[in-house]
Image (cartoon, rainbow, N blue to C red):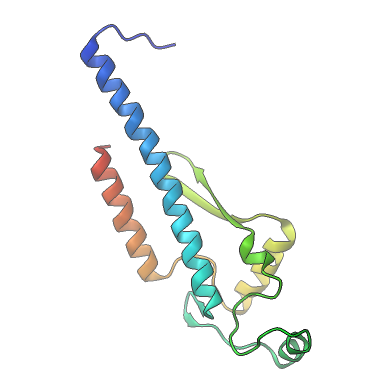
Length: 141
């Protein structure tokens, strides 16, 4: 347990705790924004390298037979894979994105092999890094 006797020191310590708490909250919010960006981009048929290639003829035929759209490769059949994409804080200032189950992770790996989608585009990475700098500057850490 930490005991602080000086009122000024105690206030400084409390301010630091509040800034750290705010940092964690902002970093988690950043992870949520990246998560949302990946989902929105993917559902528009856009991967890390631009427009994703169409479905293979066999998969397109099967998917269409099941009543699903086939005009855009949107990584959505049941919606479970993208819905399972989650985020968590790691370390002092990082965020990890992951798929919630082994089966959804396997689907994501297969889709990534065909056309990378999981991650940040250069533009998203720039936005993330600028936002991260703003967070640290605003919290005086």
